[in-house]
Structure formats: structure tokens, C-alpha cells
Length: 431
Image (tube, rainbow, N blue to C red):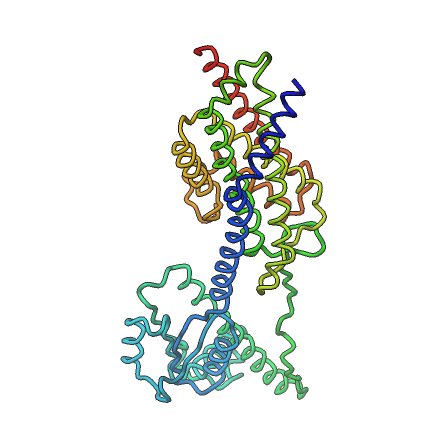
């Protein structure tokens, strides 16, 4: 049994080394895919991150409210704020037309007297907090008590509701800041009138809450998910499963040349021959994974992308890679055993891997899939593999965290090898 296993390893190794085109497909194609897809997606993500939404602001209120809101919009990194078009101010009708045509995504009009209306409203509210006999604390314009600062917002019809809500929330945040500043100023004036003590106005109430944004990982050096951390494991898995083509092709060649028939007539089980084939391509998969990881660590940063951060999860990374390579080689054995011609094995093998990759989140990340497709993706072994790598790269996972994915991939390998063995045994009984 051991002799047949070793002989199978030697034979498959020689066949693989002689197939220069197959070796190129196994190693050069994945390298090209990783480089190309990572660079494309990294550039796209950077453009999306740097792109600002064009908005136009007409500010008729040259006072605290209008100036503060306009400055807040300009300082926000999400908006490209315009106040003139070709060195010319726009009318309200022109602004509406340009927004409707899509030249600007949002048009904002801050009406005249907004600051005065806000001050008058604040003074009225403060006045109502005191007893009726103290009704002359401020000079309040009672004719304008119900007049509120007015801001008109025009949205491009194609804008989604989420962006509309975010834009409105940003404007409300700026207006609340102005309102708080005015309230402080008015109370400061009131206290000075009553106590003759001048209150210093030093903007000390800004940013008094410490908001800390962190990723939920125990690792001290927090990692931000990026194109490298998706594409390197994704295309590594894709390349490892693509060994189905040369592996299945070699099995078909054995059958067409009569070698498979001679192997079946040898005494003993055919399982060592199958395991020998799987072992050779299992080693190929390990080398593929190492090569792709090296590209993520050392080559991609030369093109301006972030480097792949492996962290301290070397053991779980090694175990998940072993499981993926086993699953890929087992799948290749199964396709080669069941297929009857080279065309069948190459076409069905490549298409099935592409479908499993699409379902597994290789082409399109699973977080953008619908709920139904997300449920379907859980049946793809490539999805188990990708989730295992995600656990290692993004969540600093230990062996226990990826153990479930490792078990699923090994069970998939056992299923494929078992099915191939039973199919071979069935064909041997017919001959």
C-alpha cells in the first residue's frame, strides 16, 4: 500500500513538472490576479474615499449662523462646497435647475436674517424661564417670536434616502453648535448685567466628549479591512481550487492511455493511488498560498497598497491553509474521476470553481449580498475558506476560532475522496 502511494506521488510529480503550461497557470495566473484585482480595487476604494459630494450654498445671512454653517460644511471632508459658479453667484431658480440636472448633488439656501431670528428665539425662550415680573431681561422682538431661521435644502432626485438623512443630520449638527454658542453668549451678557462679572468666551465647550473609534479586536495594532486583506486570501483560495484543471486532466490522460486500467488491475486498494495524487497537488496548494502571502507582504506595498498584516495568528493561518489545500485537491480528484473527457473536466471544473467562488464571496464580498444569497453562500467551500482567513487577518483569531471552518473543509476533502474511491470501485466492478 505504501509502495503504491509513493509511486503515485513520483508519477504525479513528474507529470506536473513536465506540464510547463499547467505550472504557469497554477502560479503565474494567481499572481497576476492578485496584483491586478488588488490594484484595481485599491484605486477604486481610494477614489471613493477621496471623492467629495459637490454641493452649492447660497448664504444670504452674513452673520454668525450663516458663516458657521458654511464653514462647517467646508471643513467636513465629505463635501465639495461651492458658493460661486464661474465666479458668479447663482439665483435660487438657477440653483434648483443645476441640482435637478445633477451638476450639484445638494443645493442649500441660508435665508437672510437667520442669525437674528435665532437670537430672538433664544432670548424669548430664556425670558420665559424667569418669573413674569422679570419680563424685561432682554429686548425681544415679539413680532418675530415665531420666526425661525430658515434653511432650504434641494436634493438631486437620484440621491438615496441614507445620504439625505446624513446631509440633514450634518446641517443640524452645525446649527446646534451655533445655537449653543449663542445661548452661551446671551447668558454671559445676562450674568454680566446682573453681577457685573465678565464671562470669558473662549469656545471651551467644543469637543468636550472623547469619542474613540476602534475596531473590535484584541490586537493592539488595530487593522482596517482593505483591498489587500480581501484579495490576497480570496485569490489564493481561487488559485488553490483551480488545480482542478491540471489534476483532473492528468486523471483523464491516465484513463485514455490505459494506465488507469492497469492500475485498477493491480492487487490491493486503489485508495493509495488516489491519495498520492491528492498529496502532490496538496503540496502545490501550500506553495501557492506561500507565494501569494509573500506577494501581499512584500510586492503589493511596492505599488502603493497597504501591506498584508498577518499578526500573531501563524498557527491558525497554517492550519486553515492546510485545510483549504486538502479541500481543493480532493475536489480536483472528484472531478477527474467522474469526468469522461478532457473537455468535460476542464469546462465543468473551471465553471464550477468560478460559480463556487462567486457564491463564496471571492468575486463580490458577502456583505453586499442579499439575505437569500448570503444563505446560499454558506454552502460554498470557498466561503468557508475565505471566512477562515478573515478570522485570522481581521479578528486576530486563534485555532479555536477557525476550528469550525477547518473541520468543514476537511470533511469536504473526505467526502470528495470517498466519492471518488467509491466511483472507481464501481467502475472496476463493471470491467
